[in-house]
Length: 144
Image 1 (cartoon, helix red, strand yellow):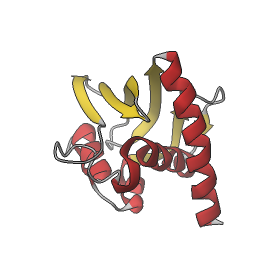
Image 2 (image 1 turned 90 degrees about the horizontal axis):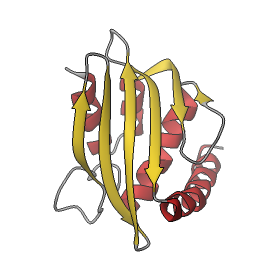
Image 3 (image 1 turned 120 degrees about the horizontal axis):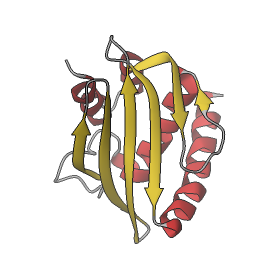
Image 4 (image 1 turned 60 degrees about the horizontal axis):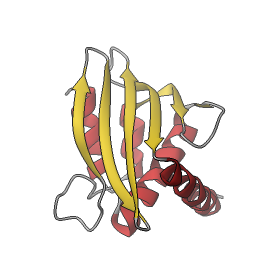
């Protein structure tokens, strides 16, 4: 199965352990709101789960690609290469339009080695920053 097909399968799932199947142990996550790259599978997984909570609301990430989902998150364009892809998405958070890309690179085992998220416009970045902080704190508290 191709890495992008696996990615869609993981985000449709409501099982956070599925991230372990697609993320390389040494995966690096680049957040649109944190300057320092986040290194390692566990921290990448935490950021992706938090993003799923912010973008998809209470029902995410399992319904992200379902057009009948209450979430407004949807991928609108794919550019897929041999070992990398750009997936453009759009959503709305508290009435603010969000447009962005997920830039992914994977290895020979189809495991993601680099995941970079880029967001626009500025008011969307500011809203995302606030909500990601809240979501990350909730996730840390539930794991602690």
